[in-house]
Length: 312
Image 1: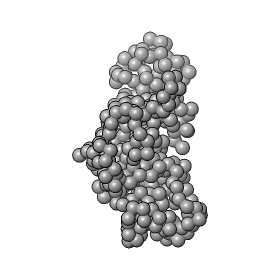
Image 2: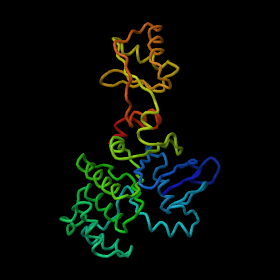
Image 3: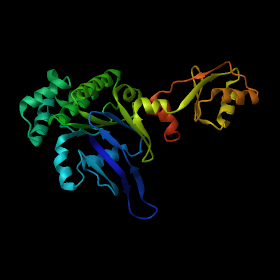
Image 4: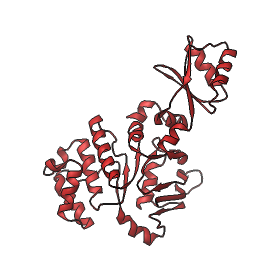
């Protein structure tokens, strides 16, 4: 069963000719029940705007979507009670305790006190529930946001950058919570820059560039879709220059172990012949297993300043 379906979903800001911005450009995806679906893209690629349309705080300007099979406005209002969502920056009262903040959210959602306690246990904040929110670390604030999201025991959980800015311990805590939720049969849709975390956590991904989907599938399918090779040569600068001119190369990157080239063809013998014809004799040429980060950089090259910008 498809929990989320989008059909050419589009959002354009501004109406005057020449002054409008196309934030989401005909996005079509399907998220099936039980999937942990990663929605990936550089800053400004339309991830948060897409989530805003799904949760009902942004109106689409084109296309359509379904949640739990519902698409009509009145039906979407009803089915949205079956989802929980948290945006990138949690909004809580800083001078209230974590428990009292959840009481406010629970009153809005019509949730009883026992459910608040369950959610605090789930995110590991039961022992800090009576501490003021302003004393919480960033990781604790993110976990409290997850607790608030889970108050109504949603079937669909939508998370916008749930581990953004966290240290490794905080990332691990969020990852474990996501795994617990997935183990309980929840469908999870999350946007993230943390590609290594996504590769370890998600079952499926979609990569969006400038508002358009460039690839989607299981994590294994997306990672294995391309072919790459690791090469070493005495004159690395000449090797890089030659690879950048190779017709089958889609990206060339230096690494600590040599030069990695992404290819449209898996014929490494042809690549070796090409380099030999250019007078470059490699000391090492072997298939290279790409990571999700490698694929992401290849597909969104030029949309960000550096790899560090993506990984942090």
